[in-house]
Image (cartoon, rainbow, N blue to C red; front, side, top):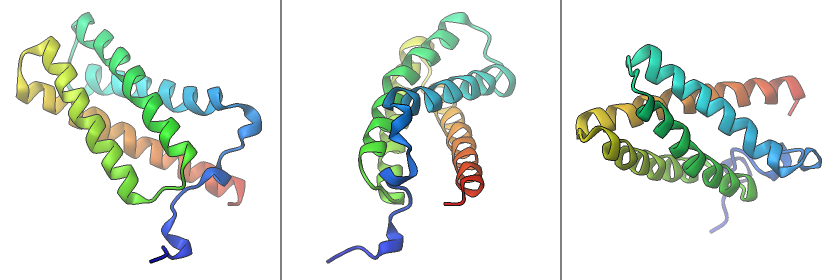
Length: 133
């Protein structure tokens, strides 16, 4: 059964690959790191350098592969949800290594990812509106 045309949320056509793949991987990575550091510092009150550093590392390990995968395919909400759930689980496990607290680790992962995802969705939507797509 073929998917209806409007099922695809975003496809490769939304990315100007002339600017280079590195740009399209670095932009969401840098924005995610900045947003998630802000969430940890301002919203969750985390001040420990090892946790803040761990956040940068885990985002490099999860954000780049997720965005590379999403850039290379045409995707809908199902693919986004699966990718975000995998990232949420991996980041919860990663934070647990440093906090030794499941509740805190899950909260860090959930709030950081929810806010950075919604922020990214907002930024991407504005870009689409401004570009006329």
